[in-house]
Length: 258
Image 1 (cartoon, one colour):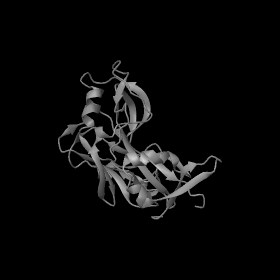
Image 2 (tube, rainbow, N blue to C red):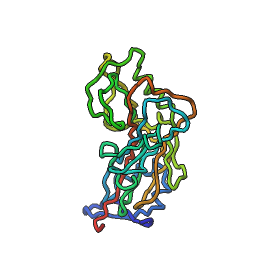
Image 3 (cartoon, helix red, strand yellow):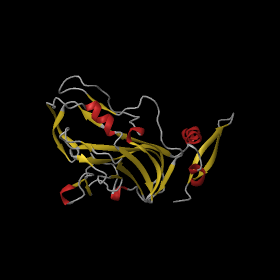
Image 4 (tube, rainbow, N blue to C red):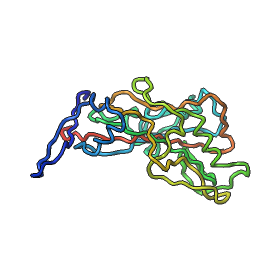
């Protein structure tokens, strides 16, 4: 898998004949992101996907010990909440938490180019009635405390952690959570009433902290770690668990013979 070749369209001549070339893994990994962005639209036999995993935080004071890991476990597997690594903090991931499988890894035949990372941080103005393991199960809003400001909470939350994308425990991409804002989908809002509106980290321009594409072949080891910056950050005022969704924007080679 490490030497997988991806075909790409070099051009089309005046007789509509395609000129197809090959790109090897080491060639793609050597490209800067601007170089890769110039050629990614010409890659053949690939599909775009968004792979996601969720890190769960309880409404407690966050300390440097509260690291959270994404892409370590898949759905139907047990994981731990970032704020409680004991047996009490264990929960079973569902397809609401992640679309990854065994051990949060890709399948053995997968050949994946990671081209961007984004993180979804959402604090609604009206707190949901029921949250189970970071997932809202009853979205009926309940009255928020008068001193609760969803914008301020989301803004500071993005500064309270660094994100580290690692391969075989070596950091390849790093930055504060606010440096990896949502760049696709989702909603953005503002405080409209005590039970309406909300805020989340949406980018209004293309943002990409990756200086070059990353490639994962088969079940090669990788994960994303959310690391507290060291300053105390108190989530007690929110009063509910939150699920922070980490998303990988991927281009995946479609192996027709797998």
